[in-house]
Each structure stands twice: as structure tokens, then as C-alpha cells.
Length: 203
Ligand code: GRF
Image (spheres, rainbow, N blue to C red):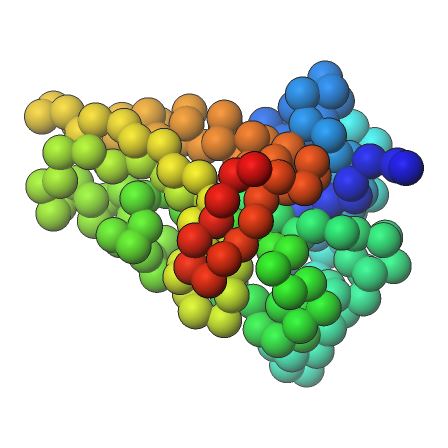
């Protein structure tokens, strides 16, 4: 049997994509990156994919009549590439039924906070700092219709230090993201994630 085929959706610099590319290439994750999809043509993540010879697909919202049409095009690309797991690695838009309906409980997201704290935000690290929490971290979760609300797969905790800025805190969290996301993909690929309602057991 071949490796699990993963489609990665990105919007920006793609450091989490890089962690996945590195982990799959070195055999630390039992999966291969089949395609990288971006909703921004200039996303640096696309260059990372090209650097590894991974096919890419750009689906800019402005090129489609509706968000639904854009997401249908993305879903078709994923299906055509025989993708079995979709990973959102810094994808900055909410997924609708066009993609989620084709990949039920087969979409993972990484979010830079300890969910459910600071969910639904593109500036979760700044909100954690502003709120004065003493620890924060990152969460990998299954994507359902509810934004940042699907069953939690893995979390990692980092301290919030008194002299932290948004940048230093985000950087500390990001280092954990790069460990956590490949680990979650590997667990999924090995069939080790069992979802029971809101709870995910690692077997
Ligand atoms: C990460 O902080 C991730 O948690 C969030 O978006 C950021 C993406 O960073 N969803 P990168 O593009 O992977 O470097």
C-alpha cells in the first residue's frame, strides 16, 4: 500500500508546510505531500513546494464567481490528486461544504493558541498576550463546520514570558507548531486517531 496522500492548503510563508515537507522527505511521517494549494499566487509557500517538486494549484478568490466556486475547484484538485487527508497550514479562509463535504473528518488545522481560547482569530498570539495568560501554545484539530471548533488532536504548551512581544511569543509557539503538525499527520496516517464525539483518542 502506498503512503497516505496529503493535500496542504496555504496562504502565506509556509513554515508549517516546510516542516511537513521535511518530515515526509526524511521518513519521519508516514505520508507524502501530493499537492499544495494556495489562495494567493504570491505565497512564499508555493516556492517551498516547487523546491521539492510538489505540484501546486493556485485558486485566487478573484478568479472565481463565488467562494463556493473557488472551493469546488480546490476540492476537485484534491480529489484528482487522490488526496486522503487535507491539512490547513496557515490557510486564511474558512472552508465550506464544498471541501469539507468531500473530506469529512479528513481535514486537520493548526491554530496558534490553546483552543478553545483565542479561537476564530488571525491574531491569536496577540490576543493571548493582551489577555495576560501565563501559558499559551498551539492546537491541531479536525476541521468541522464550526470555526476552530472541531475535535482536538494534539496540543503543545509554551510559557508566556513577562518581556514577550507578539513576535517572541509567536516564534516560541511556531517552533512547537513545526513539531506538532507533522506528528498529528503521522498519527492520522498510521490510523492511530479515533474520534469519539469531541474527544480524539490516540491508539
Ligand atoms: C501559523 O501560526 C499557524 O498556526 C496559523 O498560521 C500561521 C502559518 O504560518 N494557522 P506558516 O505559513 O506555516 O509559516
